[in-house]
Structure formats: structure tokens, C-alpha cells
Image (cartoon, rainbow, N blue to C red; front, side, top):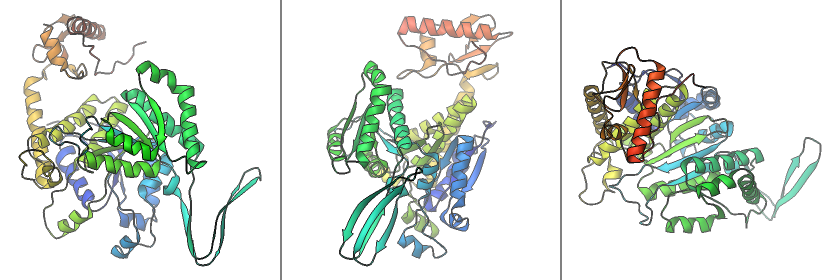
Length: 496
């Protein structure tokens, strides 16, 4: 089978522990057999970060800015316990996610991967809830220190003009611990714009929450900037689309979210988004069933799994035991990155592969083949969980079966640009075209395939004008007969 080609490499960031094991298995079983994978590889495993004094993390982030799309494995952020566990460490290195996000800036959008067979713990939830998490600053770029005597702590800002501002943090009567954090107005505005635009693109309401009653200046700045951006640039579009933007305190937002039906974007500051995305994903089923993408102001994207390195499973793996670790979030990180790369490079086959891999993964679970975390959540008769390796092999078998079926059904003996129209929501483009009696419709040398109505083929001497006219006729007649507007899946170059 001929592999799908790539033009531009992905930035690949390898990680730690069990997710590192799954990373290799996913590549070997689900990607490399089908795609001629091109990546620029960075090892963000903890020990290699230590060897490079964390320079590799910064290098990976800069490479992401260069190439535009990255995919990242879960990584360890060392704490005191990890320093004991890994005695080779020379420093308690900062979160690699924090480092990458501080370089790229932007917003992290996290949404659950839904299955009909697994119902949310919160019974009122009927639609996905997307968490929009600010990816810069706050506690993730904070500095802190301890003191061992009474005294006072002040915070001073020295402006480029020479002007200084000083505030008293606290006077203490004994040992204490202090922490300072910051954010930038430019980053907060980028965060707000990304949230509003994402809401418009996905046609979802946008909620935003902070605690400005307590952090009156700090959180108050977030609230003010969101309101300014909304009023200036997005209010008209929101009203035209019937969308709602509203602000509320974070504790009130939590209560509203629990009582809601879902189907909206919840914008949160950095730490709030970290916590709330875990809460939402767990309530929808599993931490391993959450997609995560960082979108930078310049359009750069980084896809990752929104969970940890699954340490307990890793130590069982090291003992030679088989584990039933859910790889879905990591699979969807890869598919997100491959789809984006295909879209940017004009490679519909690569983007289509990502769609097919996601569909095969979900269909495998629906067929009753799944890992232990999901098997325990299925309502009714519970399936027997399988190992991670068996789960991945089942997905691959499904991908190969689908590829074989497509080869038998598609008009591969005639030149074409592949599937011509996108799949409309709730429909199949080929079936709509077929039901409208358009199979075999011909303009010049271009024809709606007799074998598969979703393809327009060149039966001999077709010109670009023939293809475009035939597409126009198909779109018009399908709309007239069904009310469904088909959209081209192929890119058309050279038109004015």
C-alpha cells in the first residue's frame, strides 16, 4: 500500500513514562504503516531535559514557531518526590508545558472525546464543554521564596522611564513564604481574541470567569480587557449569530456549569483552566478522553494529550506486565497535528487520514474493544477490557479493513482529485449526489463517477473548466432537491 506523503515536518516532542511507551506504539501501529511520517524530533524526556539543562524544551518551542505545527507527548514536571525518584536530576526543572506556552503564548482549547455508550457523571450534560485556558503567565511563571525571620516583603516595578512603583505585600511576625506572579496585557488580549474568534468559528456561547471581587486589580484587568475586546470587535458578530458572551465569578461559573446542558466554551485563567479541564474531562468519562490544542496568536498550533504520564502503569510495564492504558488522547493529539499539517500544506489525503484514524478509534470502542478505564464506565453489560497493545492492534485492523473496502469501492483506475465534497453534518455527500440521480453526470471530460458518486473523475481530456462546471451543477441540483449545501473538499488554485 502506497503511503501518504508529507511536505513539511511536524515538530515531535517525545515525553516520559507510560505515555512515552504508548507514543512509540501509536507511531508503529497507527501512523507509520500509512503515512511517510516526517518530523523534527525533540526528546523532552526528563533525563534528557536535565542533560541539556532544559535547552531542548526551548529549542522545541522555537522549532514549533518555525514549522507551525507540533505534537507533544505527556512529560514529567519534577517536584521534591521526583528529585528523590530521579537522583540524576541537577535541578527541579520547570514545567515543559509552561516553558513552551510562555514562548508560544496563546490559548489552550480542551474538549472531551464523547461516546454514546459512556454517559457523563453530570446527568444534565448533553453537549461537550470546551475549556479555553490562557497559556501564559500567572502561577506558571511565578517566582517564590521562603524567609526564616520576621520582616516585611515589598514588590517593586522599575519602569523603562525610571519611574518606580512599590507596594507592601505583607509584614510577618515569623517565617513565611512569598510568591509573585504576573501577566502581560498583550497576552491577555490575545487570549480574549482567540476565545471570541473560536466561539464564532464553532458557533458556541462564551463564558468567562475570574475572581475579581478578591483580586480586584489582577483579575479585574482580565475582566476589563475581555469586555473591551468584545465591545470593540466581536459584539456585532455575536449578536448576528445569536451567541452570548457573559462574565461571572469563578465560583458562580462552577455552579452554572454543573447545572448546564453543556455546549459552550468556558474561558479560564491559566491555573483555573488547568484544574477545570481535568474536572470536566473526568466528569465526561476519563482524563484520557480529552483533546488539547494550543493556538498561538500567529496561528502556530501544538497538540498534546491533556493528562499525565501514567506513572503507576509505567512501573507495572517495567516489571514486564501488560497494561490497559487508554491512548485515545495521545492518538487524537497525533490526528490533530496531522490534520492541521495537511490543511496548511494542501494535502487533503493527510487530513482525511486523520479523520479516518479518529473514526476507527471511536468505532473500535463502540464495538466493545476498549481499555480498562472505559470498560468500567460503560452502561449495561460491561465489556472485558483489553491491553493497550491489543486496543491499538484492533484499531489498525479496522483501518486496514476500511482501506481495503475503499480500494474496492473507489474509482482508482481513473484520474481524480479524491473525494470532491466535504461530508455535510448528518449526511454523506456521495449518497446525496446518488439520491439526486447525478451518478454519471458529465460535463466535457469530467464525470461524476459511476463507481462512487463522491468522486469527479477525468474520463478523458477533462479541463479545469469542465471540473468546476460539473461541481457547480452538482452543488446546485443537490441543494434544489435536498436543501443541503455541499462544500468542496478539494482546494481550487488559480481562480481570481
